Image (cartoon, rainbow, N blue to C red; front, side):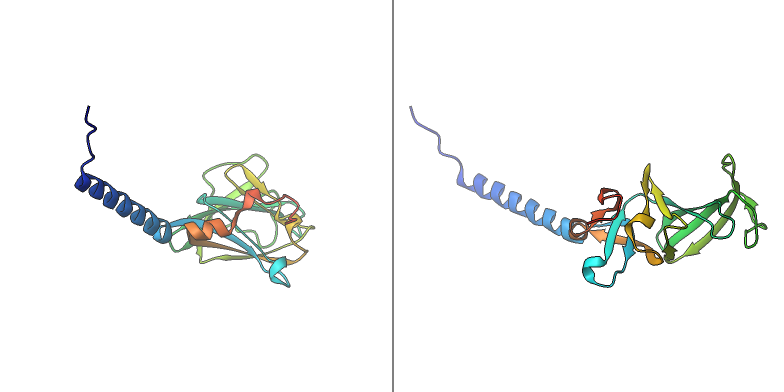
Length: 181
């Protein structure tokens, strides 16, 4: 009984196709980018700094207003050129409250809401334990006021991460809720 020898040209073609597929996969991993929202808090040292991200396009900032002592909520949507503040909701109506805008299309019990539709390239947000700032997205609630020292500036920026960027940074909801690293 004779064993059949594999066809050498067929092996060369299969090997070349596998190598080409591997090169394309590597190039895709290097050059493909995913839109994310980056949360950055600069600390006194690099070790004190915090950077995390999430991929959901919409999120909400919540805090207790320093004068009214009631919850204030802002809803944002990631766009190609920045962030769009879509709606704002608040429990109490006082000085500085927007009142000339259209009423928000979605009602929330116990809140007054307005449709804002204002664009920002990024957000700089100062948080403290007194205002209890938090970031909500996709069912996740990030208590940012527990992560950082009082009066820390949190920068929220839409970005595009490569696969390597995503390996080097954490999802925000995977970090400990008390901010320890």
